[in-house]
Every structure is written in structure tokens, then in C-alpha cells.
Length: 182
Image (cartoon, rainbow, N blue to C red; front, side, top):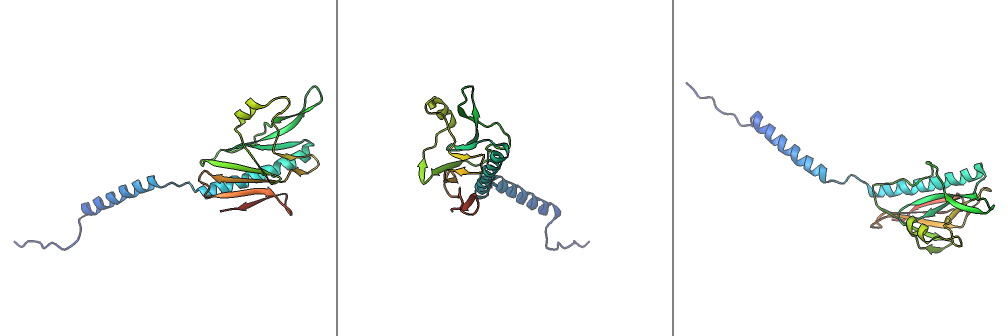
């Protein structure tokens, strides 16, 4: 009887074991990868903020209401000017689902300059606690019913490490412009 000569190569079992090991290693690598693209998230958030501000400006004109936006270190809210029983106007948070800050999976920070002067931003809860009848909470930027937007502003939106920054500001040709800073 002659023995069959073994021809060089791998058995099916050996190939399957190698493929399984490669699949397990690839799965471990994929789990470690952070798929969030921070730059894209910050850019999209800045673009959304710009578009919401433009929507608020349009809404102020169409509804013949005075609207505004107030920024905090990590978010913002829109306000509407309402008349109370005394006939005095007071700013109240606008309850409109279209004009709301959208939470994002990246921690972001806002910096606001109004007419070239940096503004110290506080959390809404702190502002409410410190507000009084003489010094109520007011928006940083106003969207008036006559179509004006005031005062001039520059809002910088950045991730917590300030690696990705975008600025939203008053424009000369367009009412609100956005620019990539880094």
C-alpha cells in the first residue's frame, strides 16, 4: 500500500480558525473606534443654530411679535415678548418645538460677543435664581417684528477641547453668516 503524499496547504478547519480569529480582532477594533465626527457635529450644530435664528427672525415678522435668543455656556433658548396685565412687556421662554436647542452627543461651549463686548454666560437656573423685577432675564439678540435684528453679535460654538470652532455673526450681505474658525 502506498501512502498518499500530503500536498502543501491548509485544511478547512485551519482556515476557519484563522478567519474566526481575524473576525474577533476586527470586532474588538471596531468597538474601540469612536464613530462620532466631532468636527461635523459642531459644524452641523452651528448651522442649525444659524437656521433657527433666521427662522425666528422670519417668525417675528410674520407673527408681528418680538422674539429673541439667549445663550448659556452649553445651550440656548428663544424668548417672546408678551404683555402682562399692567401693559408692560416681559420676556418669556418661547414654547415652540421648532425653536429649541437640540442636544448633541458632543459637549459644546458657546461664547458670545455683543457689539464687540464679550458676555459672561450663566446657566439658566442661575439666571432665574438671580433675576429680579428690576433686572429680568432678557435675550442677547432680538428679532424685531419690523425685520431688524439687533444688536450686532458673534457667537462661537466649539467642542470642549476647542479643536473645532464655528462662528455665527451678523453679516453685511446676508443677515446671519457662519464661518469655520479651525
